[in-house]
Image (cartoon, rainbow, N blue to C red; front, side, top):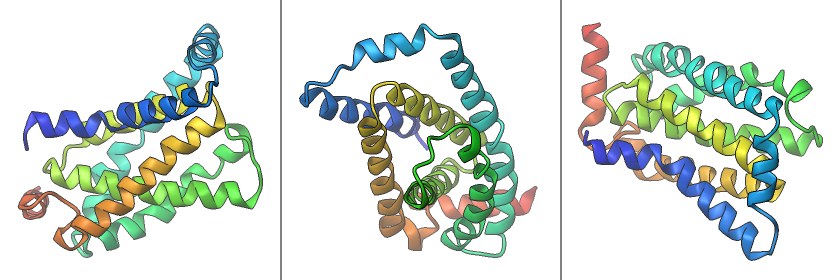
Length: 197
């Protein structure tokens, strides 16, 4: 696994954010002022800290560091991800009561579809790095910060960001699903390392 590939993978939240900002800017919507206004509020920085520490760094040792390897011992990578996703989704459901603007059933469905796409991507990233929890945790932190930054811009920007993530996550399944949701040759490495530990 090259450092360049890892850097490109970690850059996906930034790259997708730039696309979302470009689309919103093309519609003559303000970009910089809303982000600067959000960054001037202490509560926004608290959200960033919580999103980084609890949701990014705090979740990944459990989801990808422990549960995913356990599930992949008995199931394919796709099957393991499908089993992990409802548990991960249940973990997130309380957020609807205090963190997200709840717009009804459609919001829940959209969130679950995006979460599944994210789960596929994180399995791919975990398996392709030979089981690096640090890489998936770093990506998760960047993803949460990107969502919070774009939420200050507009719901459209957040929607574009998440739509791009869905294309990536489900595209990974189509392209790499049969190969263990990993770059060629990496799935076997992950299986071997799991049996050795």
